[in-house]
Length: 566
Image (cartoon, rainbow, N blue to C red; front, side, top):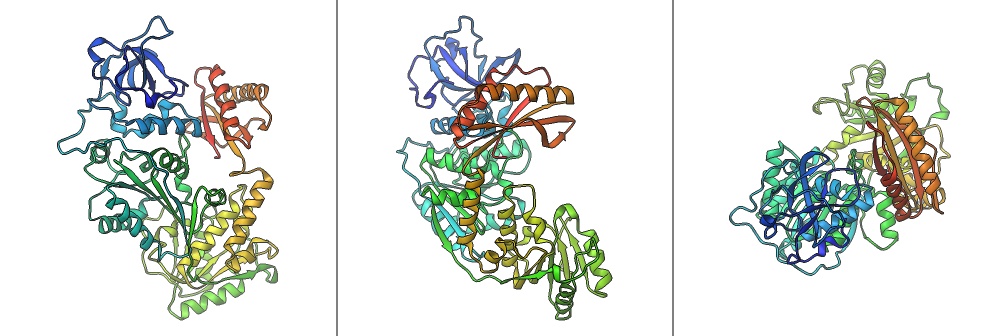
């Protein structure tokens, strides 16, 4: 990649174009620009090129008068009348690629709507399009809005969005999943008085048409899922991330970016403000607050209390969840004509618990609800559910909520387990009118009193301290380098070879862990092995990984991917 490509002059000699393609290769490739295209070709424009004997879409990231390569392929055609990427987007893509371990071509392709990833002509803006003039990049204000409940967040959001639009700037709002779309879209339209462009739905052609509305400046407010972080909003002034703590903001395919960080990088480059909104902020977000990169605004609200059922005091049959005192609580709720929620881990399923309650509480209307359920009806007394219930967090209320096995939440093989338990209890408290009951066999668990006393400051202080002591993110960085192949022996062998190369090139402060089967050992017929790299400096970790990738001669059928902090 040509250094500083986004700042190159439009008027420089354009004999040679530096072009990136959608491939996991570092750097840009030089192509000769035929004289007929030199007046029109520009930075950020899509072009048609030949790469590895096939025609594909390339993106221009720089120019030169000469090339060190003697024999060059020509640019075959210009696909755009105007560049699809402004200079600041090219700069954002460079930083994004370094942060998430992908190539610049992969990053820029990710930012494009699917329709433009194919070699299709783009005629440019329609009539009435808004030209974005160059403007000085200011330093944005980054805020974490920690709202303990759900009733005050939109007062703050409305004010910030209105102020942004009044300055003539645009807004992007990210939501974790489809359950938010209708309600948030209605709120945004009411606040702005303008059309809201929802990006994350429909066919490739429909997505492209909506993308064009934003790209041309005919709309200023964008709404979408994780990929909305790249929406081409003109004069971007504010990025809103609703429920920042959601796991849905981590992309599950290469490049494995996280929306929280992608938004942060883009806001730095474009000088936009950020408003992270959360009822249980991630540890990473609280670290940004501790580092004074983000300002904390806390909206406190009284929530239902947390109580415990110590199962060591009761003798229960193996495989059952219904303790005697819990049964009494449920009988009371049903008798009073109220509703109760029983939370169970998705991996354990709801069916056995539903049957257990039905056999114990005759006449109670018991319903199971999980992510495979098509809809949630109101004809129940007791709802046995998983995380799927949180789709209805804003409008569903229970007299009583119960976590049937809170101990299981703390004992997941995941350094995020404690925060996951905290998040679970916080969500249930928001949905409960009387209290949240936690069934446990370990009253000595030190986080339980923090939950009971609503000591959020104590919880985050403990988690940050624990992560730092253990060398976990956000105090260290993991890069999972995954080798995959349809041949299990080949995948294993190449992972060992990759481990040897990483180990031989390792620098001080960076650890290399021996290859293991990936957490998802087989996906779509591909066998996967993982080599984990850890270090306190992201720059050191990524430099080692990228240098090794660049010099690693992959055999046919081998694919390498990099996932930062999986």
